[in-house]
Each structure stands twice: as C-alpha cells, then as structure tokens.
Image: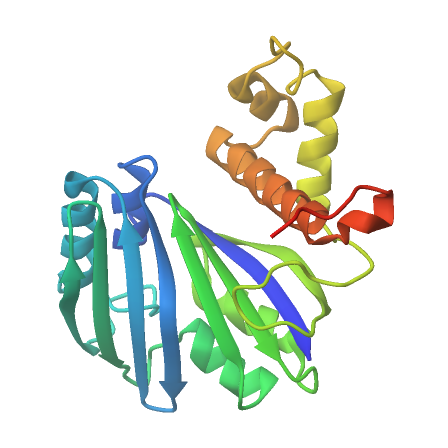
Length: 252
C-alpha cells in the first residue's frame, strides 16, 4: 500500500469553507468518513472552534454556491444536501451528500480514475490549507492524478505535495515508514530556515512574519509547513521504542 499526502492552499474567495476557517483562527474541520462512487460523494465532518467559527463553517457548507469538494471553477449546478448530526458549544458534526454533474471534478473522483478502486481518504482543513491523505494500492498513475488535479483546480488553489511513501497503517496513523519521518522539500526548507535564523531560540531571533518574508511565502503558508513538520517529527519520536535509546519504558 502507498500513502499520498498533499495540500491545496486556496486563494481568498475561491472556497467558502477555506474563507470561513481563515477568518477564525484555531478552527478546524477533519473528515470522519468519506466515500465516493461515480455519481455520488458522501462525507461526515467534525469541526471544532468557537461558536462563531462553527456558525461560519455551517453556513459555508450549506451555502448554495458551495458543493462538497467540487473543483469546478464555475457554478456546476450540482445537487448537495448537508445536515447537522451533532452540535455542542465547540464542536459540529456535519453529514453531506453530493451528486456531481458531468462538469464537476473532485479529489475522490480523480483518485478513482487514476489510482483505482479501494482508495481510502482522510482530510483536514485548517485556514486556507486543505490537506488530503490517500491510501492506495500503488498500482495507479500518481503523476496523471496530479496532472488532472492541477488542471481541475486551476488558479483557485496551489497544490503542494507533502509526502509519498509505503505505508502499513490506516488513515489516522501518520507515523509513516518505520525507517523514519519523511518531510516534503517545502517542510525541510521551512524547518532549516527556522533553525538557521533563530526562530526556535528563546527569545526568538526572528518572528514568523520575518521568516516568511525571507522565504518569500505567505506567513500562513510558513506556519502551516512548520506545524506539519513539527507534528510529523513529534509523532515519529514518540512512536519509537523507548528502550531503543536506553530509556526505560513507562509503567502502565
């Protein structure tokens, strides 16, 4: 099995959910379940944030101009229904049923075309960054998938490959290969620059805005890459056998 992780960074005004999340720092949406056939897509999403953020996310999902994961650059005339399954002060669970039209495209449908049946999907949406994790057989054509994805997205979003590797785990387990963690080239560059310029010193020698200017990327892009790199490195560290470094395992 192969793991493929990439992110779409949406431009303002090109994705209602991305706009809502960008306006509410700390709000996130992750998929609990996502399934697609040739003519349908069903998904359940778990959103967290302030009541104001969750109201904005719900409005984005239910707005008539937004269709779940549709990559069409113009109104596609698709049919979608979204309903709330659960709601608390800081969480929201949404169920969406989307029926695309012939002009629609989506990540799951492009994956079915180029990576074959049986692809598993996991998503996380934070700010303008929409991260996809796909588990597939490895028999398909990843290059053709990305070509089709970039063509469908157009100038609405920038596509960034984060990881591709062999994997034996299931969605939700991001430890990756047993040999260690593999950062994308962009994550490596962000992390190296952060260390070199003193971002991790105490006190910091440079702030995120200055570091982003040095790398010539938006501040949100830099902080996203650093968070993803830190997450992968932390999970890989914790996943190691504690006794391999001569440290006694914790007692249960």
